[in-house]
Length: 218
Image 1: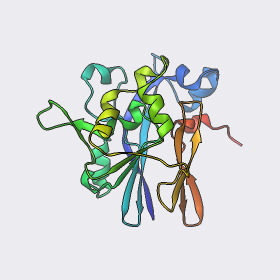
Image 2 (image 1 turned 30 degrees about the vertical axis):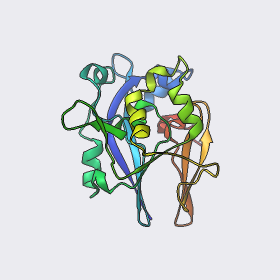
Image 3 (image 1 turned 135 degrees about the vertical axis):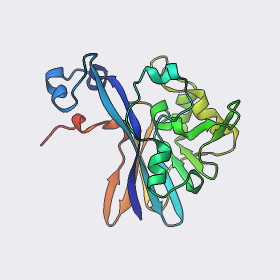
Image 4 (image 1 turned 180 degrees about the vertical axis):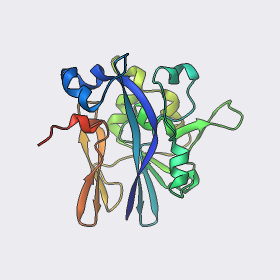
């Protein structure tokens, strides 16, 4: 098994929204804010080579939204999903499985892209099965008012319409080496993959721990 991070880009969000009741005097030391109180965040995914399967966990924000939409989030940096995969020697067509921890646009937006005519959508990973937990899927397509803006139908429904949507089973396993846990709070039933590699366990926490600044030092 081989595991590597895939950096899909950076964006900016208000530091107060990200750290909640934690005083700015504390979080600003680790995640310094600009004059508009915005902090810079990386969108990182995992690429796992597990036997004959090439599994991508999450895929960032994608590139199909409008300039106005992207302007809200101040995208920055040199990284992109395609560049980082290509740097790893991987083509979109090589991916066999896409595991989506949850369906907020900054985690699943790269699942779907414009077709060549830009008059419809196609799957970014045409040979892949797309895995989502069924409880979270139902939550995403019938969202509550607080989360509605984070669930974009163009990121989700084409996967189902094109027959590539697969629901994670009750055992929460993706492969012999990848299982998972369900986390509540950030959203309903977020799937956090547990990866067994070389006798150790790696857990991809997604937005349960969005940065090192959210971990209390020993």
